[in-house]
Length: 209
Ligand SMILES: Cc1cc2nc3c(=O)[nH]c(=O)nc-3n(C[C@H](O)[C@H](O)[C@H](O)COP(=O)(O)O)c2cc1C
Image 1 (spheres, helix red, strand yellow):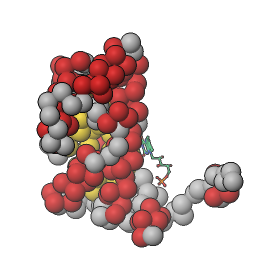
Image 2 (tube, helix red, strand yellow):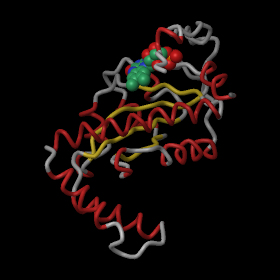
Image 3 (cartoon, protein in one colour):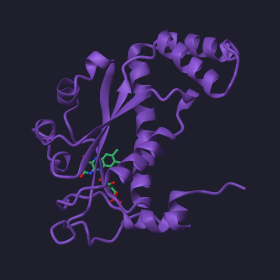
Image 4 (cartoon, helix red, strand yellow):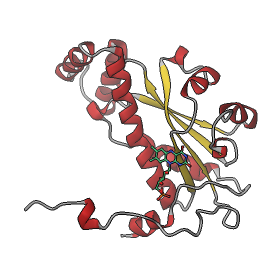
């Protein structure tokens, strides 16, 4: 499988070159993320793709991760703060349209989702949404590796600062996790030539027959 080779090739880049990733590749990575599975299938997070240098400089303030501003693109995965009935209604209606179903055909699903999410606290909904966002992060890492685009997943950022600068709270969102994209600076990134460290497969995984 070529994917294994690409996953061996990738690493969390610390220092990027000035080379920019083409919009075509960025669009493929975005499409891959949009195709990611999510629990209940309702995609409870949104993706922001940021190139604006000034905004990125501000987002990186106080963080040890210079990749926030010194890379080609920055992806911000922003989880929903809560799952509203309106959102479920709209999402289920969209699904009915896309599957050529009659209006109301998915009412049972809709009502199940509404009752499920309404008994969760907003905090539980927000935590759940962030978990879904992390699955998108995984897809993004894989998609980037397939395109031989470098990436760094990052939790080392100030979520409140991101929420503030990107106006996420007004949108009912919060910054869950971020990822930079670009091309490694082979000569100046100390990690570029470091062998990958991973557990032996039989220590990491157990087959139960
Ligand atoms: C959710 C998550 C958060 C991470 N946060 C950071 C970070 O803030 N800064 C950083 O340089 N690397 C970060 N990393 C990269 C990890 O340190 C890296 O993936 C790990 O050491 C394995 O190395 P590899 O990805 O190069 O194979 C993060 C990785 C993940 C999955």
